[in-house]
Length: 254
Image (cartoon, rainbow, N blue to C red; front, side, top):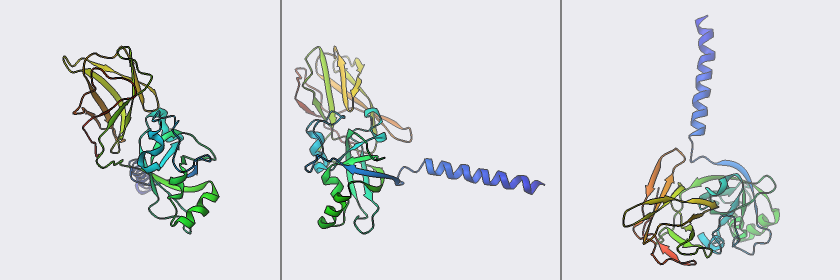
C-alpha cells in the first residue's frame, strides 16, 4: 500500500522538477518558423515599430528582424537572437544573430527577417538562393547577448523633441542579454529624477523634462528577475535638440 502511494508521488515530483528545468532553461532553442521582408533589398526597414529609424535597417550589418510575440509591446526592441533554420541540406549549424527592430508576423512565424539575415542562415551563397525561394522555413531560436565592439550605448534624440517642453529619444546599441524596462532622467545638480514613459517600441518620452544637464538611468532586467540600474558616464547636454546623438560612455556585457 505504501509503495503504491509512493510511486504516483515520485512520478509527480519528477514531472514537476522537469517542468522547472524546462522553464529555467534560458539557453535552450525554441522551435518556430521564419519568413523575410518581401520588399527588402538586403537590410531591414527604416520605418520599424521600434522607432529606430534608419539605424534599425542597418544595425548589426543589416541582420535584423521583425518579431511577433517577442516584440513584447516594445520591450523586446534591441534584443538579439540566434536563429537557425532546420533544413540540413540548406542550413548551417550556426545560423545568424539578429536584432529585433520591428513588429510583424505572418504564416505562424516568430520572425520576419531581413533578406540578408534570411540568406545568412544558409550554408553557402548558392544555397541561400534556394532558401530564399522557400519564403518561409522552420527554425529554432534562442536569446543571446548583443555585442557591439567599440560602441557604447547611445541616445538618439527624436526630431519631434522640443527643448524644454518635450523630450523623446531612442536607445541605440543595447548590449548584453537583458531588457531595458525603465528609464529615468535626473537633474545633475540636485539629482531629482523623473520616470519616463515608453511611447512605443524603444522610444522614451516625457513632457516638461528636468532642466540643466541630464543624467540618464536605465533599468536592465534579466529574464530570471534580477534588475540593475545603469548610470552612464556622460550626460545629455543642457541645450539638447532633436536629431542629436549622445554617447553614454558605458557598455553592458551581461
